[in-house]
Image (cartoon, rainbow, N blue to C red; front, side, top):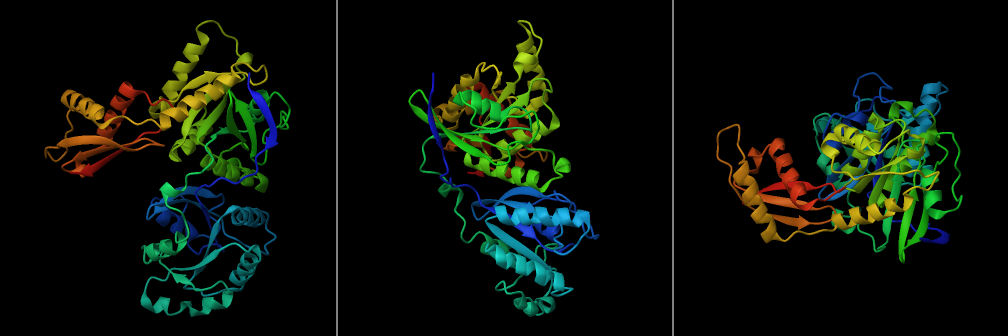
Amino acid sequence: MPTLMSRVSDAPAMREPIVAIVGRPNVGKSTLFNRIVGGRTAIVDDHPGVTRDRHYGRTEWAGKPFTVVDTGGFVPESADVFEVAIREQANIAIEEADLVLFVVDAITGALPIDRDIAGILRRSAKPVILVVNKADGEKREEMVGEFFSLGLGDPVPVSALVGRKVGDLLDVVTGGFAAAGDLGEEDGRLKLAIIGKPNVGKSSLVNALLQQERHIVTPLPGTTRDPIDTVLRFHNEEILLIDTAGLRRRSRIKESIEFYSAVRTLKSIDRCDTAVVLLDARQGLEHQDLRIIDTALERRKGTLLAVNKWDLIEKDSKTAAQYERLLRDRLRAYDYLPVIFISALQRQRVYRVIEMARAVRQEMLRRIPTRELNVLMQQVIAAHAPRSASGKEIKIKYMSQVRTDPPVFAFFCNDPRLIDETYRRYLENRIRERYGFSGVPLLITFKRK
């Protein structure tokens, strides 16, 4: 039986920085967001106020990873209900961000609303970079001088639409950020984040592990607003439990406080080693659960699924196996995640969650000898050689595991551009068949030899 350590951890853990993009409507915030993250994931339209919810994107520049938050148009003095909600949530993005990009419009110049927003940013005491967008030529760049009057330092002219000088902006943005390899923490304890939709029993699970009612548990969804860290001693090992606020679909985030919880949950995922995604057995695996799983794996975290409220399911000896088979059918590419059935209320198998999380963590740190990998590679290629659409022969020379946490496997070949996603997935599956890596996101890369 684990013993308890009755203290809550408040020591900050290193994580990837969060950059918030703010500004009045229609200055090109979403276009800049799309340019930075490398895809059209935010709505872009010429009408002001199109971006109603925040969008999150994880990216990196010069080997430095960070998360970008795209916000709706910031209208400081508006009484319109919709604009008030946007303003409140933009304020939260500013509060939670490590750096703010304040976007203004080179064509319209500095407007009174820009000056109002600049005042809010100055009072926030957050680091701010003033981005003058739509500066798509030298003539417009010459006009950025008027933005010095906003009192936020040197304006950085860019054109998000065509990508002009966005690289220069990102050099400034990431100047003080840590490289990916430098984000590791000295704290060697297993850090476990309990994540999932509201009302699936996250706080109940933490309480069951701690054997005490440390966290408020109610039938109302979204009771937990902030992540709370608690230290549990399990078989002479300290484990940091991170209980997070519930994630909702963005279209259902109607209260500013829920947006705050969603941002904090992203931070908790970044801080953890292993994520336990809690599901409600009565609801099964829903689309939002898949989004949460995707969030954890996108951030390269070891992940397992805990199906809670299993005591409420009518079952026989075959129910668990049938349920798990249906789960894996829905998981598709994520079918390598381990699954456990628990009841936090009845404290059934709750400590198995800790044991499985430890096992997933060990898999994240596992390293396979190069000689073994190349024997496997020869067998795999002999069974199914890669083919290119152009007809050019693809020759894979050798492979190696180049890092752990998460494991990265590099294949050295004559032309990496010819390897398609289907063959990459084939190689990943063969590695998993041989070595397991349950709950672990594997990275497969191809390099020219």
